[in-house]
Length: 439
Ligand code: GLU
Image (cartoon, rainbow, N blue to C red; front, side):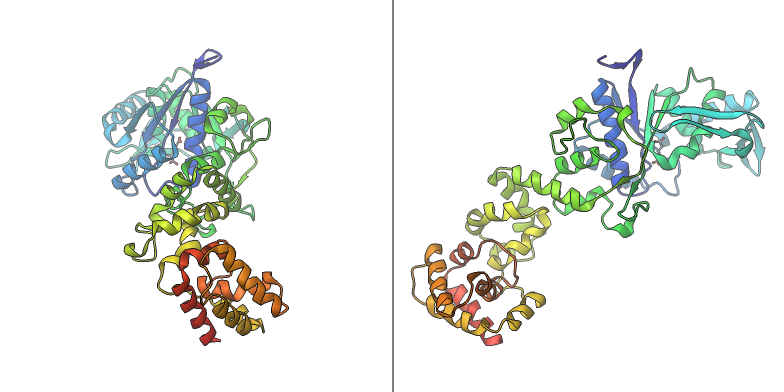
C-alpha cells in the first residue's frame, strides 16, 4: 500500500496561523500529519494561514519553520502562504457569487447556508459528525476590504492543493460544516477526510494553557530538551504503539503509526513524563555528545558564571555522574555551578538543615583537620572523613551533608568525594572554614 490508502494517494498538510510561537498542541498536530504522510508514503504539505493581517506576525513564520525543522518534521511541499493567494480567493468568491451562494450584508459577503438538512462527515477519529443546517448562521467569506476570511481560504486551498486528509485540533470541529459547504458549492470533486485530534489537557483535565507552565516548543528547546525526546513524547499523545514500547526511535514510530489508532479521549500533557523521556534520551548520548549538548549551560549564554570560570577538566571528570542524574539540561548549572563560582551559592533550605543538625560544627572541624595535609585523591578524602565521622559516632550519610552544603551550597549534587577532588584542597578548605564560621 506504499504511497496510498486504498486508491487514495495521501496528501496531508500542516496549516499553522502565525499568531504565536508554536504551541505543543500545534506541534502535536504537525507531528501527526507528518507521521501519517510518512507512514503511508504520502506527501506532507506546509501551508501558512496568514489571511488575518491583524493577528498574523510575519516574523513568527520563520520561527515556526525553524521549530518544525528542529523537531525533524521535514515537509515535501511549501510553505505556501495564503497572503500570496489573494487573487485565487477573489476568483473563488466571484464563482460563488455568480452561482448565487453569496449576498452582501453590512459591507461583507456572506454565504447563504441552506435552511434545511444536515452537513455531515465521517471523521477518521471522531466517527460520524453532523450539524443541522438550521443551526448554522450565514457566515462571512470576504471582508468589506476584499480579503478572504479563514474559512474560505482554508476550503479553497484544501481543494487546490489536492489535500486528502486534514488532521488538526479538535477546536476546529465547528468550522467543518461551513468549510464543507464552501467546498461543495465550489464543486470540489469529493470531501477530504477530516481527523480531529484530541485536545491536550493538564492534570485537572482542563485545556492546556499558559498557566500550566511551558507550552511553546521554543521554550522546551531553550530549557535543554532534545528534539528526539519531545517528538517521541508528542507521538504518544492520543496514540500508542501496539506493543506498548513508548521510548523508541522515530523511524519505528513511523512504521507503527496508524491514523485509525488515534483515540478521541483528551490527552494528558504530562510534563513530568516528558522530562523523564528527556532524561532517558540524554543518558543514551555518549558522554562527549552530552557535554556538547550541555555547552550552552556550561560555557555559553545560559551559564550563570563568567566564561573564564568554566573549566572543561571539571566537566570531563564529573560529566558521567551528572549525565546520569539530569533530565533537563537547564538543570546542569545547579549541578556544577559550585565548581565554577568563586563561592557556592548557598541554598537557604540546605543551610537551615545544616544549622539544625547538631553535629555540623564537629563534622566541619573534623573535615578541616583531616583535609589539611592528606593526599588529594578521592578515595583518601572519603576514608579520612570516614575515620573522623566514626570517631564522632555518626553515620556517614548524615555527616556528609554539612560538608556537601559547605562546598556546593546544596544538599544534592554529584558524588561528594570526586567533587572535592576536582575542587582542590585550597578551595575546599576555604569553603569548609567559611561554613564553619557561619555556624
Ligand atoms: N490555521 C488553522 C489554525 O492554525 C488550522 C486550520 C486547519 O488545519 O485546517 O488553527
